[in-house]
Amino acid sequence: MSTAVALQKKLEAESAAYQALQKDYTKAVESRQRLDSQLQENTLVQAEFKLLKDDANIYKLIGPVLTKQDKTEAVTNVDKRIDFINTEIDRVEKQLKDMQAKTDKKRIELVELQTALQQSAAAQQK
Image (tube, rainbow, N blue to C red; front, side, top):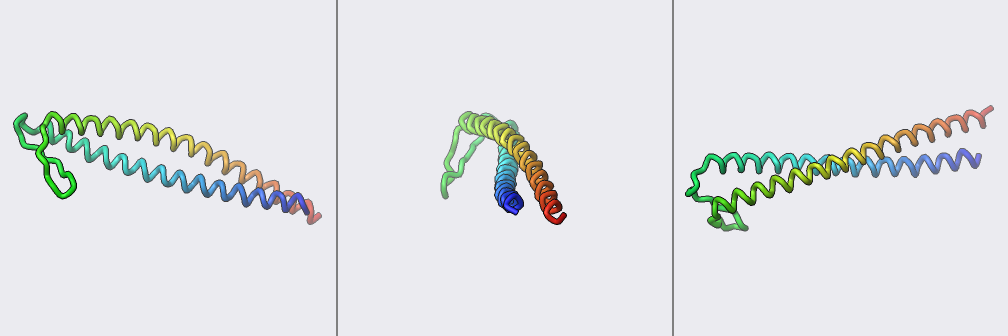
């Protein structure tokens, strides 16, 4: 009986760990989606900048105030932001792959524990 109890406790602990991994994975997916949205927005801004003349007025919203900004500075800022977002996307993609591998491994462990617990229960009934 102690083997079954020990297996049950381990199964519960591993299940909790699996749920935590799934929660972290969901957060990372949401982060990836936000980054995609930001990248799309900044890419649109970058495309709009290419359509503007060199002497066009560009304003940046800082708090409640629109502040005039130099086109070269604005283009540079958007380009840097796009580079940063792409770097973050790469980081999150790597994180997602790692989390997926950990989740898969934990799922296999859970199945093995459930099988062992079922076998233990069947052996005790005999």
